[in-house]
Amino acid sequence: MEFNYQLEERDFLNFQLYFASKSPQIKKQRSTARILGAIVLFLMAILFFATNERFEAYYFLASTVIILMVYPYLSALALKYSFKKFVKNNYREECPKSIRLKIDHATIESIEEKGHSKFDIRDLTKITEIKNYFFIHTDEITAIIIPKNQLENTDNIRNYLSRIADDHNIPFDNEPNWKFK
Image (cartoon, rainbow, N blue to C red; front, side, top):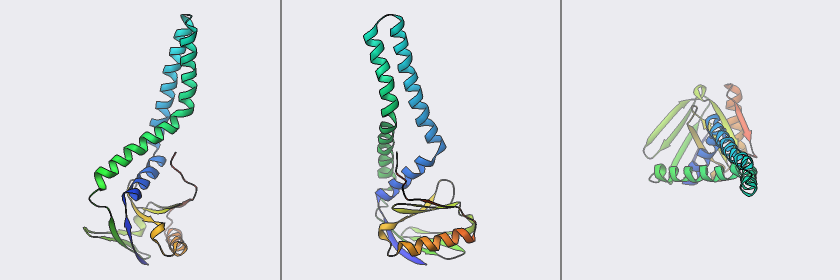
């Protein structure tokens, strides 16, 4: 199977966001920051309760509840902004990036203007399908990004990749409802 497509900055950004959402380290960092922020605010509330300064105590108590509710949204925005900046700085000169992808039952070959890469199918770590992309993971942090909006027949490619995954015992993750949070 062979097809051509172009990658834009948003494609690289969406891969970075997907990778971040699956990274145990980033999940742990976000969770730790949320909990530590809430603990600090709660301790401030206790301190003000102990000194009978009720207004300040209630203020910090309310802030604790608010930070627990709003932090996931704010941290997602900050992370997205950070990744946008990263992609703009690192992929600006490559975009749009034209790619010809050749897939057979033994290898995947990605041919670009600056060169090409060839991967043995057995070396793939997994294949992921989300709403708008296929990601063919070549190792723990690298993947071939395939935007579905540039494919003529997504079902044929899904079936082909699924068959390759089954034949070579490669995990095939289908996450049509994935959204960065």
